[in-house]
Image (cartoon, rainbow, N blue to C red; front, side, top):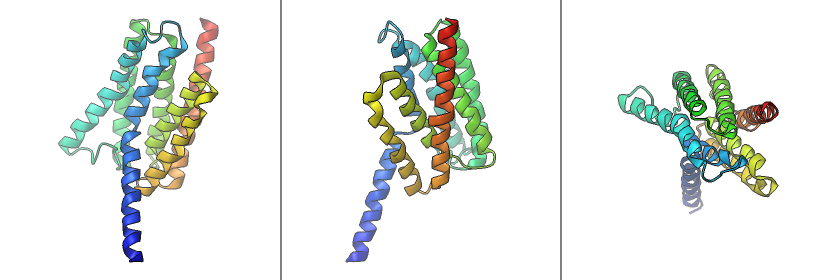
Length: 209
């Protein structure tokens, strides 16, 4: 009886972890951040469409490319679980990000959207380099980036969102997609390096503007 309960508990835990992983996967969380990014400047929510343009290049096109690669058998799954397959996928994402940045500059997108995209470019480059040697967690990086910057944009009442970082990290460890160290490193890149880059770029553009 005790063994049966243990098996059921493991199954439930895995289902919860899978649900968290799927619901808070990078394309979804980053897309929400990009849609929110124009909120720092006048005109929001009328300017949300600039965020939607960024979502196209930062999330939709890279994800569509991964789906195509999965169907072609070039990539194992949508989460790109095989570390050896990550660098070319991340490099492709950087190309799409830079193309999107060019479009956003051409249509005079709000600086807040530009800053978020630039910060994401920096984060993806760091992840790509690390992925050459180690399977760092992109899920942890994305949720940390999204929640930390959201709190910086909307203020301290939104601090509870940071609890999503350990939740996503837990899900990745339970599913054996990453080790604890890989999850922590991903969160540090997303919530530390990338968010710090966002803050520095924002301060710079505000002073220039």
